[in-house]
Length: 120
Image (cartoon, rainbow, N blue to C red):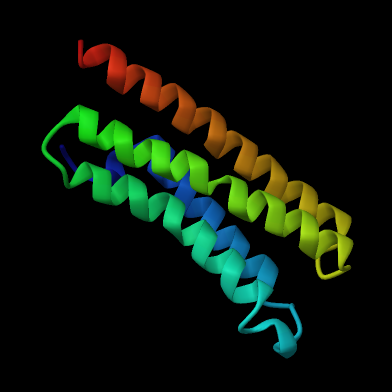
């Protein structure tokens, strides 16, 4: 299907993953195998699913993996809220992550619609 790195939605999802890594660097060591790991894995799964979908043969398959990626955006969204309420993230960090997550959600939703409408 093409090079995933050329997709704006992948770039934004990759940027989100980097932001999550940056935000979780300051988490306590006691969270290394807890919330830190969970947030990082959840954030990485979004661009990873987009990349995997690009390796498939059809737009329908790419759309399927993008739907999985879209579902995965709910994980770091909740985890950021939890981290904020546990005082592991400050308000600006929480807002920045939440804004990026919402942008990725919107981009993925629009991309899926485009893929499926082109596939008719």
